[in-house]
Amino acid sequence: MMTNSNKLFRWRDPYDTAGTEGLFAAAMGENAAFQAEGCLDYARILRQYGLDPGRLADLRDPAVLPPLPTVYCKRHTLRSLPERKLLVRATSSGTGGVMSRVGLDAGTLGRGLSMSVRVARYHRLLSPTPCHYFILGYQPRRGNDTAFSKTGFAFTFFAPALSRTYALVWREGGYRLDLETMKRRLLARAEGPFPVRTIGFPAYTWLLLRELEREGVRLKLPKGSKVTMGGGWKQFEGQKVEKEELYRLAETVLGVGERDCVEFFGAVEHPILYTTCSHHHFHIPVYSRVVIRDVDTLEPVPMGTPGLVNLMTPMVGSMPLLSVITDDLGVLHPGGDCPCGISSPYLEILGRVGVRDIVTCAAGAAEFLKGGTAP
Picture 1 (cartoon, rainbow, N blue to C red):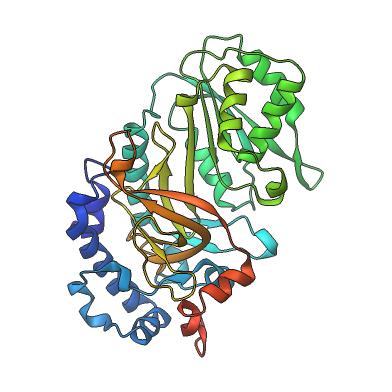
Picture 2: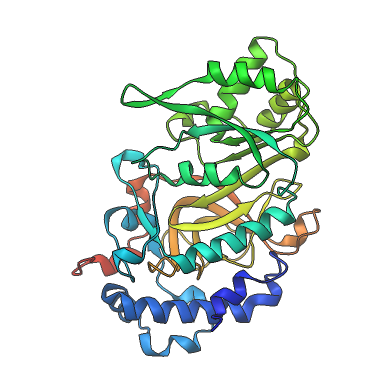
């Protein structure tokens, strides 16, 4: 039997948010009811928000579902399925030593695969042409469950991989940044016939390109090469540069034009693939909705008004991650403001707030934490 969530994740146009409003609400209500049945703490949270777990099939406005702060997800684990049904486990990067731990079941992974193929095809990231990958992130190894180590590796299946070179390699009991090997191999690959694709943290991308520029390197990577980035600057926040500087470096050093520079956005607590359009905007795909909330009241604010970013999706079956508030500040813009042709609204990330601030701002959302114990 095909659920509303499965129908949503098989929708032909990944940006037809206007045509999927009813289906999205139905999928959210269906998922919320499933989560309430499998997770008693989530059922309690729903009741504290005045929602009857037995009547969620009639949900019309997904924004009324309780938004869980990601800070809460880092300290408590809510689960709706038994451990044996979790096929993949992932953690956030653990900034400050605290991380979210997420387990995904087969149904969730199937929806994620369908989403990834449709979004990658739309943005012309799928290709039958083999290429060399340079991953500016962690080399996968047993015991490393960080989401980026998994998504970075998964990205290398958008086109057949001839080779994979990692910036963060495991040596002497820890990860070490090895840009020298990456530079040497990049210079060698530039002489070959196959495209090169980079994927990684923008900070490491900037470090690599800056070093190459200082060394006077000027390459022309083969046709079809791309520079792709995802994640934040983390401990490099003080060195953060504007996107335009990264695009300039990519063209100057690698010969990769701005249209072949692509960014991704997402969170381990919200595993939706947000991909920039040709004008570098994160349009909202059909698999999710974004609400911007007032930093004091947590009430939704009008489009164009900055506030806390609330991400919603019915994708995850194993955990009640339907609605989460991140520590990002953002603003939602009408799709018509972007000349790329995608009609769905787009999200602009303005920056981050600190843990203390997010706890204060999300005090209303976190009120349900009092008196309950996560399983």
